[in-house]
Length: 308
Length: 255
Ligand code: SF4
Ligand code: SF4
Ligand code: SF4
Image (tube, rainbow over all chains, first blue to last red; front, side, top):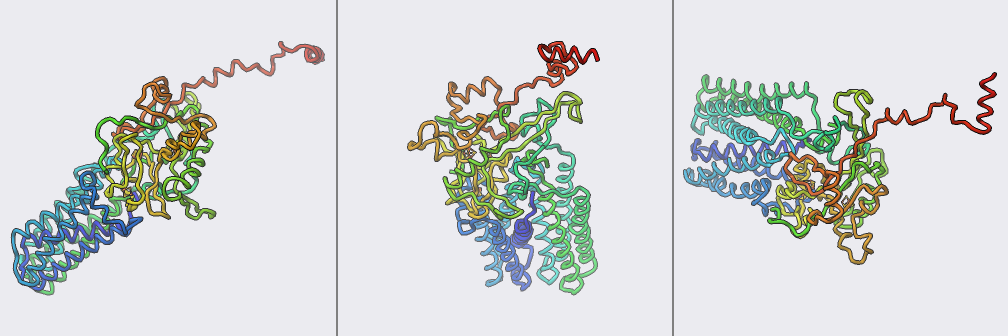
């Protein structure tokens, strides 16, 4: 599948935003601290930026409001509805902290739960597609939710290191969640590597009873919408290298930096701020790489008709 | 509207495509584009239409496959390979994933005849339905930003200003080999139902669970080329010559 930059940025940014909103919703940061207030603004900003970038690839974005109507059957519609619903408690949480220095547990918990539910809907858009073997598994939502929570915890660690509280609890929680996320991703990738395709050129053409089927001629000489959108292929050796980079920047580097920060520095020290911030930067690079591979490595059933 | 219609529809309209007969001439592809660019919804645009990198939205495409019999890597090693021309347009699936994934309700399946359509005024061009279709039957129109797909020529088949013979999809009407047939699969006496019963009409990718309405007729078993060779007279055999050629044969024998 074609790794569109807008979708990669959307899922990465809004994933981090919802993760941070969940951490804030759990009341892990001191509502009166300026760092926590900034964290609220950052969470809202990331969620909004993510949602806006997701409308960029639409053919007719002016009608995007219509996407809220089909929540009965469509995960994309459910995602839209939940994204708007989630805004309410997340915004209330932010107002409570920014203007009256308080945290209300009930609002917070609702915000945290809705944030996770929104990320679940995003993941289910992919996981529900039978036409893409790589995505059609429960591990897909597991990965999305864990990556969202992990990036939220790492993001919250940065604010904790500025003195918003729960330090070094948050960096340690971040390391734990990173481990869980990459474990799920490792399982997802092994399934991809060992799995066979649901459909084959033989089942796609119904000609398997005669013999093995291979494409002789495409319908047209040039690329078309389908081959551009679904025919993206990444060389196996490149994918393996990129996966190593993703593991390195997405797990080992941030985990090491967070651990060093937790062990060596107290909060509100230049050292802890520097280490957690570097960890966050590495993690974002790692997740963007992981997201790119999520698309690039997934093969669509239609390619059985295009010899790919 | 995005949910699939419940219960059995009164009619189940669709196509039968005969893989034994299709000669891969692309006539249906051209007539489909010709009819639909001026018919239902936005025109079917092409990008860079006169340039080297031309591409555009098509509702029907012909692929060509080579089928190598089991046990053979090379053509002729284990029987003869066959070339099969393979027309592909929307199969108007009964369990159409393209309908249920649509967030706006633009994509729908008609309760009265099972035709799967896109309401272009509602479509936001998110492309998710094209992702969900395992057959590649949906293509985005990049100029209009809306999803295009085979309409089963809904604007022809019910068109009472047409003569009866023209009230069939453009691709069916134009096929010079008669490889495409249109009809009601709910009616066991219809041409399409009978063809499916006689020739073993098949579903494409049944494992995807889409329950396609359109059926494909498999190519008939082929006579083996090597057997046919015996029936062709050898050039060395002059027994059948008569008249002038018999005389010439005799003269040449003597020299
Ligand atoms: S062939 Fe594809 S576009 Fe047509 S109904 Fe089936 S899933 Fe939908
Ligand atoms: S591209 Fe249009 S028809 Fe397809 S899912 Fe999106 S809104 Fe629905
Ligand atoms: S039925 Fe009409 S729209 Fe569908 S492939 Fe045939 S000509 Fe094209």
